[in-house]
Image 1 (tube, helix red, strand yellow):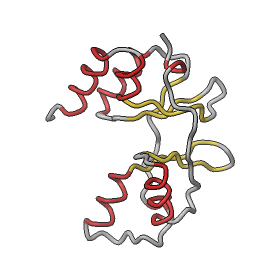
Image 2 (cartoon, rainbow, N blue to C red):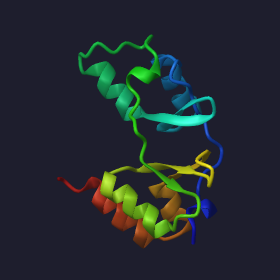
Image 3 (cartoon, rainbow, N blue to C red):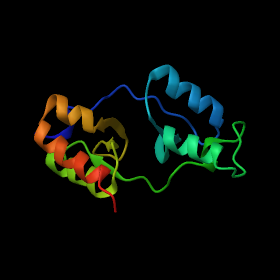
Image 4 (cartoon, one colour):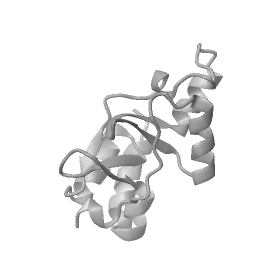
Length: 138
């Protein structure tokens, strides 16, 4: 089974100029933990709720009124909508990610898949293996 069968296609995204506080508010309102950062319709980065909390609370120079581009992660680890769920779970485990951005065949944003999506819609065993790698102490 390919990941396009289980991915979430309703995507909340931001630009690199979106303020950190606005991105956090979007995450809270949509109950999500990851935001793709796009420019001209193309993926340029990603920010997680954890990125925001750690950077704001760490005493670094990041402030809530700064652009999200100052804390986004790049390059972004992604998968393709035609990738198998097993492959995607392996990528998630290898990188210790709970969520992964899915691209279409043209490199555009197609969706987001989470370990929960895999467990709910595909295989609890595969999700469990990926989660085991994600939380493994390295």
